Amino acid sequence: MEKQVILASGSPRRQELLRLIVPEYEVIPALGEEVAKEGLSPQETVQQLALHKAKEVAAAHPAALVIGADTIVVVGDEILGKPKTPQRSRAMLQKLQGRDHMVYTGVALVGPLGEETFAMGTKVRFAPMDEGEMEAYIATGEPFDKAGAYGIQGFGSAYIEGIEGDYYNVMGLPVQALYQKLKNR
Image (cartoon, rainbow, N blue to C red; front, side, top):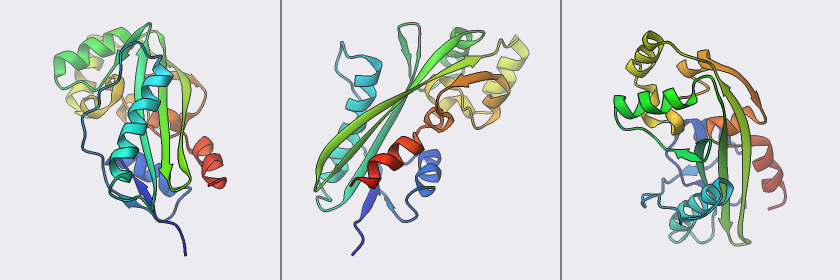
């Protein structure tokens, strides 16, 4: 019998990416609040958040392999979350434009074989934007559910000058690294 796999995320992007390596799985989003401990590195932060999501769902499904994931954008020493307002989106985009930043995704696997977490980092170069471009991008609504106020796979792609690392990691799930981990479970 095939083992049940559950994705503890409602993200359409993560669902699309997981389908590339796990054709059949269930989606049960974690509902708990995302709160990380103070003083952790960005990599530790995303792993902790991913593990919290996976453990929340695994508590109700102990026989399943539950996959949790979390993505953050870091510019300088500042973690940029998901903006809720146009003003916050504008502030984040102003910090990113013309600069390199890091995108970290943490992944947690929780199941009968125990827990495992890992994190991937990808460097992204964001192009400068003029005020009109910024306002037009914010008006698309895309920044509001994206860490760092942009989506590399959407309208935000027009402002990505380049990346060093895994493209899918920036979308929210490091597909190749996760595939390698799943092969061993």
